[in-house]
Image (cartoon, rainbow, N blue to C red; front, side, top):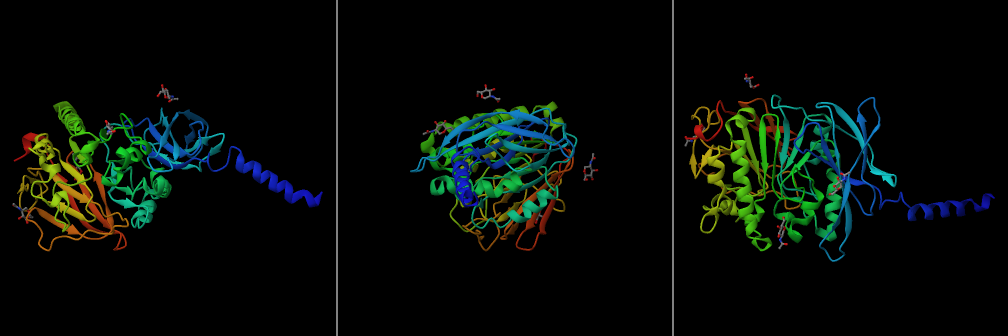
Length: 435
Ligand SMILES: *[C@@H]1O[C@H](CO)[C@@H](O)[C@H](O)[C@H]1NC(C)=O
Ligand SMILES: *[C@@H]1O[C@H](CO)[C@@H](O)[C@H](O)[C@H]1NC(C)=O
Ligand SMILES: *[C@@H]1O[C@H](CO)[C@@H](O)[C@H](O)[C@H]1NC(C)=O
Ligand SMILES: *[C@@H]1O[C@H](CO)[C@@H](O)[C@H](O)[C@H]1NC(C)=O
């Protein structure tokens, strides 16, 4: 009897690796997204074989995993040679109590993820959401990630905004790099909503890795969306439609029309009273003072002025609707601009440039860390450039209330030191307060 034991183990092992429960069925790459309703949260994950899409969850502490929510999986075939297939599972948790902590596991009878914890966001507009913001984080050299994970665990953030460029790239090595990146970001992204926009590194196969892996509000496969949080309306869009025209020139017009409609609605007086802050996030900036040859270094950048002949430019559109703050990445550095429109600085006053400024404020924050390292600046700052920092790091933002918004830059190179900070103060919002 004793002699047969190793064989039994072997048989069990063989059975186990061939049967449900092996790692092909194991949920991985778990992340959250917020659909704009504080009583709900979207959970997204991946398996490599078909499986049910279940989330077991409950209040934490106390309830364990007493509730079960059900969803669907979408089959995603990467465009690489191996045509690797994965199943992207999406489940919406509903009837959450705003502000309540929940524990959850996702998967199916074939395998469950480890438990994760999140807090449902608060409801209404009268609270102060806190964000971590960055772009350009890769699988290799994601220098800021350990600090972001630690701070997420400490409860410093309600939401993370990733302003394009992931993994370097999602599709590399038949999308295995994308899988590895999503596993790496999981400790952050499974605990707070991870809200994204596409960058140039997501371009392959018509942005399919981006569109399938994430579940943003509205049509999950869209490259643009908007959502509300506390006193803010946040618009995420694709600057890349302007650069990869072979995927459809009509996408530029389609997105532009959508942006205009969304801004129009968000600027209706009663809506703007409720959520006065309008914030945009897009990957490639309109302005920058880096010494590369990117679009933002050109006087008439495409994002700012549009396609020849000046069609669908975003600067005029955002200015017209009184966008308060524009978040960008792409340049692997941090740059803060004075309130700016058409190369003219519209300080609130020289003493307090960000108190009632006469134009939108731009922040470029693309130095979270990737294998392409940092992007240096031209030696002389431009007259519209207020602060330039060439360190690995990320931005924190807290929207205190209807008038006060705090932004600060964290240097990971300098051990978490805050190396820049401003109050953006607006007693009035909207186009009528521009210069
Ligand atoms: C699954 O998807 C279908 C069609 O997309 C939808 O009608 C159905 O409600 C979804 N099921 C769940 C449980 O979300
Ligand atoms: C690329 O994807 C978009 C959806 O984001 C679609 O409208 C467009 O037709 C696609 N283009 C090509 C060439 O497949
Ligand atoms: C804006 O304010 C800053 C800081 O006071 C100042 O250095 C800059 O010259 C001002 N720009 C204009 C155009 O007033
Ligand atoms: C908004 O927040 C700022 C910063 O905490 C504070 O000084 C100000 O009094 C607040 N305004 C209102 C109306 O609560």
